[in-house]
Amino acid sequence: MKMIRAFIRPEKEQEVVQALEGAGFPSLTKMPVFGRGKQKGLQVGPVHYDELPKMLVMMVVDDKDVDRVLGIMQDKARTGFVGDGKIFISPVEAAYTVRTGEAVL
Image (cartoon, rainbow, N blue to C red; front, side, top):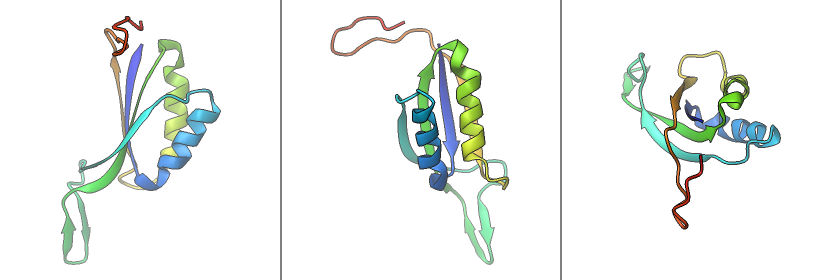
């Protein structure tokens, strides 16, 4: 299994979530976050915004579904402008249900 963490523009969050749900991936966690990428913020006239708002969408999927989820996220989150975000994929070693202590994997 893999953990997918996607940092995307807040205005694209609903589109990404709805596309994932429509493709059969209803389970995810999302939260508002702030950060900056290579561009180190945003300069608008004399005002510099050091950190910009993003949405963090996290989900764990089977290895076979990673490419499909990645494609959906990239397609729906892309605007073509700097600051569209980043997607990180990591292995998941173990998962447990809190209530029962049962191993999920």
